Length: 298
Image (cartoon, rainbow, N blue to C red):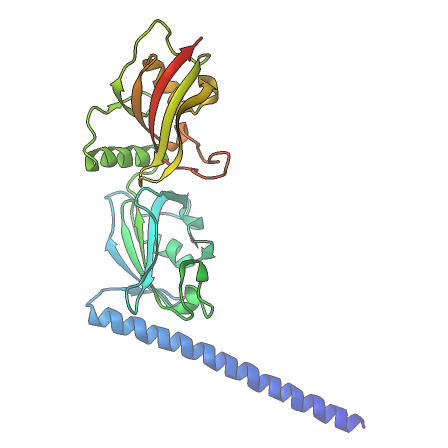
């Protein structure tokens, strides 16, 4: 009886070894297939790329400024674009004004997925540099793909990482605001000492000046720089103390009186900061406000 059990156990163990061996062989074949696909693409498009020891390839499209190369302890501001290497289908791209920020050593998150190749490629760049990464499927979204951005299983990924030349968020956002003003041909914008850009279309009138203690009746519309309206009130019923409103408003609205109208482009630190609004959105976001002061009470 004992011999039968031992024989059965041995047979089961051998079967398991065979199964595991075949799985390893299948996984290795995926590595080989992906590598062949990437090499063919690189050769066909005359791309000079470096192969990392983990299996991905990267091309330094633009090295960046004349400063030092990024180190893992440096802060970096960047955005990413993700598409299929096979057919160019775009799966994900950050809006140009969406600023991802992290230390280089931790810059590996992409839509909740950990992709260390992002971090590794940054070490070949200086601020303002651009890297293109050719990711085998097993180093990207794997056998299951990623339904959140419609990536199918076993997809080889073409990923571009663009770093900003600036080293601090305020300087990045100031450039983005200036570029936005130029691209939209907005006239009359003035930079407030606080960093807010504003254009007063009507200064208003009356004896009541606006201060932090003022109770304001107002209309407003708030948008992102992409033009998405996130909040608006135009029925003339909104009343708030200026002290309860965001810092950017507190800086600029005292320049107006009753009947005044202003457009403000507000850096994130003077809007909803790193935490975002009460709904948890708009963190680290430059905002575009149009405000009309209907009444002022002190």
